[in-house]
Length: 294
Image 1 (cartoon, one colour):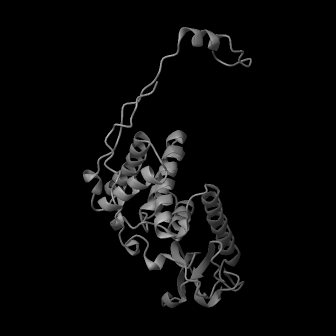
Image 2 (tube, helix red, strand yellow; image 1 turned 60 degrees about the horizontal axis):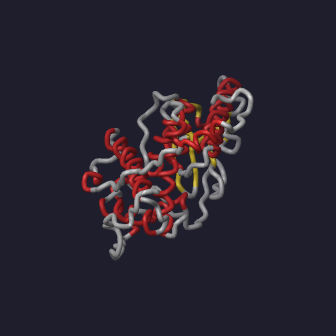
Image 3 (tube, helix red, strand yellow; image 1 turned 90 degrees about the vertical axis):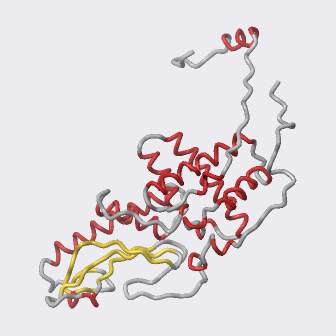
């Protein structure tokens, strides 16, 4: 028989839940209001991310050459990736996002644009296939790495959620697939909590680093007990995962403080029953498929 845990003190029980202003968690800027917007290079849509090449004609030099960048648009938020390329502003076709035939080396330059677009779309497709939360910043970071490699500029994050998903993806790339799966589940639990409390869609929740407070973490812990009905060890495991991801954010300079020092992570001894002699004999008689190790 397993251990009776009914007598274990539950500091989370019979306590009035404390709510706090969620406007500090989900800034208004991150919520799509449905306002139409227009850009010179493409039509903005809020249903799917869009990527376009932007010629910054206003920054053309005395020689007439202007810098180029990739513009990422998702849910009303724009982000940019520098291309380290320049073209004659007067020879730029904004509709086609290509230089005209009268531009020097037009064919080679336009081929380069096609290669960049292919890399950017490939990066976006991979990000979408991972079924993670999509934000303009996450798309920007993925494209930055695809176009410029890992030696590009330091990544900047809107908040903890996109950072956490990128950390989880790092586990997967290092072939730590089990760890990645468990940590992904932990981050999604945090998102479930934020979604439940705010009424906002998951894609609109980024959780600014400044909003990860002791009070928020305690509310998240209560949510796992009261709403998800998780056991103490399950709650402790999830909190440990989020804490580990947060420590990484601090070490990389994205977060400046650590609220986890004031958090107690719950746990209880696990009870494992030994198999009886009869049960072992029954297991030995099981027919396994050919080639399976016993």
